[in-house]
Amino acid sequence: MKIFTDIKGWFEEFKFKQKLLLAITVVVFLGTIATVSLVQREVRLRSKAGSGPAVLTIIPSSENRITGESGSFDVFINPDGVGVSGVQLIIEYDPSLVQINSVQPGSFFTDIGGQHEFRKDISTPGRIEYGIMFELGSGLTSISVKSAARVFYTTKSQGINVFGFVTEGTIYTKVTDGEANDILASAFGGEVIIEEVVPTLSPTPTSTPFPTPTFLPTPTPTSSPNPGGCEITE
Image (cartoon, rainbow, N blue to C red; front, side, top):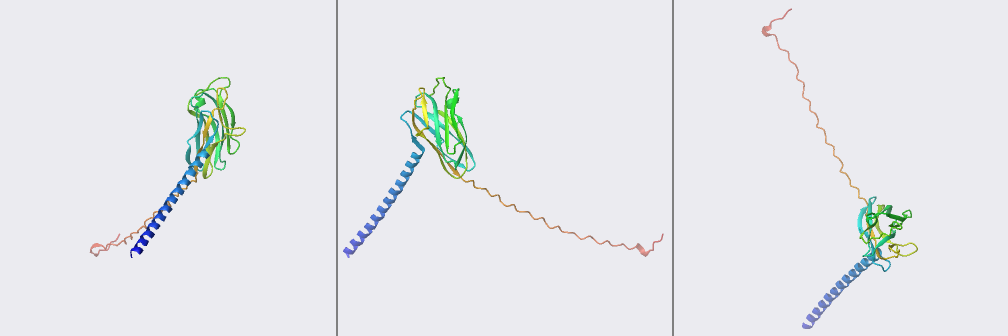
C-alpha cells in the first residue's frame, strides 16, 4: 500500500509542476508580446536624427477623436541651450484617415517676431513640408522651449493615424543653429486614434389618447296644467 501511496503522491506532484510550468510559460509569452508591442510603438513614433542637442516633439503625443472632427497639434522644440535660427519639418501621415487644413508659425518664432516661412506645402496627400526661420539677416536665435509650428487637421475615417518625422532623404526634418548647422538629435511623432461616430437614437414619442366625451341627455320639457281646470280665452 505504501508503494501505491508514494506513486500517487509523486503523480500529483508531477501534475502540479506541469501546471506551474505551463502558467510560467504563458506569463513569459504574454510579457514578451507586450514588450515587443511597446518597442514597436516607440520605434514608430520616434525618429533618430543627428547627434546635436535639439529635440522635436509632437504635443499631444496621443489623442482620441471621432470621424469628421477637427483637431490640431504643436511641434515643440527643445534647443537644449543652443541658439536655434530655424526649423524644417517634414511630417508624414495617413491621408485616408486625416486631412491637413493648415500650418501656422508657433510661439517660438512669433514671440520674437520677424519670422520667414521659406517652405510651406500641404498639397501632397500624406506629407507636410514646412520650413520657418527668423528673418534673413536678423541674426536672431532662441533657446526657448516652445512650439515651433501648429498643424490643423480634420479626421476622415476610423483608424490610428501616426504623424511621423522624416529624418532622411533629399528633404528631411532638421533644426539649424545660427551658423546653419543641423543640430537635431531626435524627433518624436504623435498619433490620433479615430473612432466612428455612434448615432444617438431619440426615443419614439408616444401619443396621449384624448378622453372620449360623454354626452348628457337633454331633458324633455313638460307642460303644466291650468289651475282649477279653467279655460283661458282671449
